[in-house]
Image (cartoon, rainbow, N blue to C red; front, top):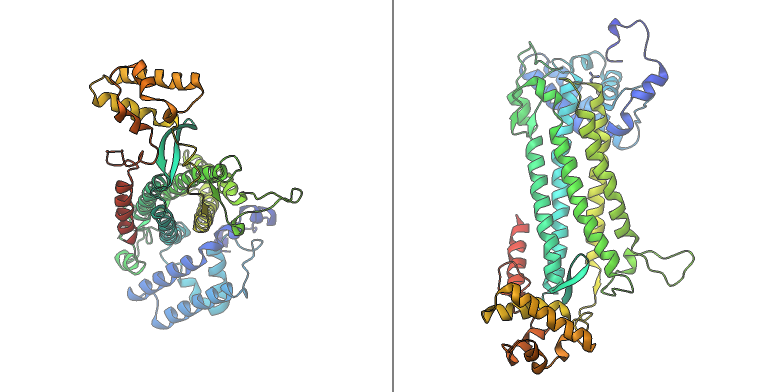
Length: 457
Ligand code: ARG
């Protein structure tokens, strides 16, 4: 027990179990040990620990980490309040008296948030890596599909033809912004709170620059009260995971649709699909569905911590212990979904000619015909109306655009000539796009090169 001095009775066993966070914060063991070692090393440099005491503490901490990782030591929630106090007690068992000096000038308030900040920085790096891997997977798939025509939708109604590469690049862009959010989060976490004590620093000459540098932080935090109370960087982390998951979930939804018999656009590999216990023919996209399903929890995690924090007076309050469960859960969820989606897309089979016939003469080329009229000097609103009439005529005749004749068009407006018929050509629909950021295969290829370079750094 870390604080027994003024108490006559120890904490009720149910109360201890209720309040212990060990099952959650044991994840922080490596970061806690790292923080403690650096703190001890600083205490040595300012003369509070002898060389010998420092060695004992440092070796003891190494042993604890090894015993924990090998499963030899299992910190027990019915004995300890959290992993930080468990480590300190264990150190006491291992090295005796010297262990009592480790906590000099340190409160669990700054100790914990130091470990959490270290953990977040590491987690951001891990997420960034898999985000980029996923981007690479999508870029490879895009490279192979710059002329694979698919319908682009608005309101889930066919709108204009696009390429599969163009569609994938939209996700590459989203992932690009997701990466930026994660980098920003890591920057927010990059301050050393160690040396802030419980809330008001210390009367001991703790060298905060030293611990900051040794732990690899950018700068020591400037206000001890803020340092132990701030959980903004965790909210940024949860937000990054939530937005990242929202993007994955939209993609997952499209994968589910594309792999149905109705769409028949992609085939997921057997290794990324599941069967049905009853219907032998079934091949289900469960992994995409799970990604979509898990998204809700990451939104909840963000709301949960926001709500926990909103009424808390400065500085530390025990409510804040609740921060970690959401953070670890969102990390695990987002990380594993990124990996899963990446695997799914690496092994997907694309039906490249799926829409070629189906979009031939499709009404989704109507905007192109309106643009043709605009280039002939017709105001767009009028052009829109004229093409509406063309669609109506084709529908009345029960035919598609490319089955109409020039005479049919001329009957609607005399300005039409043979060159208007080119607008009904699906094969050249993408090349006809002129604007930067459009699905023109040349521009798409340029975007692919742009991203391939960007993903490298
Ligand atoms: N396990 C707790 C947490 O993560 C530590 C509490 C430390 N501080 C305190 N004053 N009780 O928040």
